[in-house]
Amino acid sequence: MRLLTRFNYNIMAILKILNYPDPKLRTKGKPVKTFEESLVKLKADMLDTMYAAPGIGLAAVQIGVFIRMLVIDISEAKNAPRCFINPEILSFEGEIETEEGCLSVPAIYESVKRFERIRVKAQDEFGEHFELDAEGLLSVCIQHEMDHLEGKLFVDYLSQMKQVRIRKKMEKLRKETL
Ligand code: NI
Image 1 (cartoon, rainbow, N blue to C red):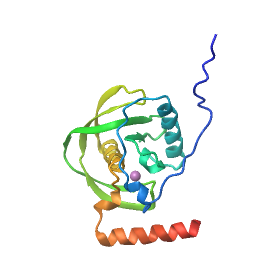
Image 2: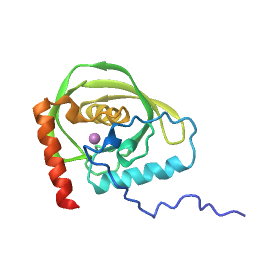
Image 3: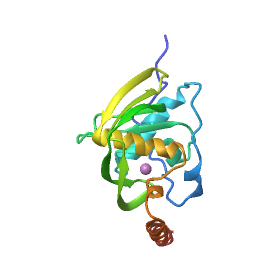
């Protein structure tokens, strides 16, 4: 007889989120090739971290794990977690402008233009392939998180002047919390 004790879902792990302008946020995520058990734990930890923040999306790059993986939950009740590994946009349509924020850029919200509808393919934490049509907030959130996998942040879409202002604000915030 063998007891199944591989995963302990009772242990919550809140991971440290990297803050802009940390240069590590500019690192690209590497494709996931082998789907090891540790991905299941990583997914759970990323979701714990995202819910605790609180946020609606988190990319692995933001917690210093440089792989192409992200989690999202845009539901009100926080009971519809999604995990995308090696995501790729297959097609896109329309334009939508949303006030975006980012867990790596606390307390900053700015308007960003994205595709309104996308079709995306990805794998789950077990390596299963899936495709999904997303629109509105889900579409925006997927695109925002996918940018993180390229070392890109939503502030990159803003004017130079705004970027300088945000960087100064973040550095001030960092000094205050040290
Ligand atoms: Ni973000």
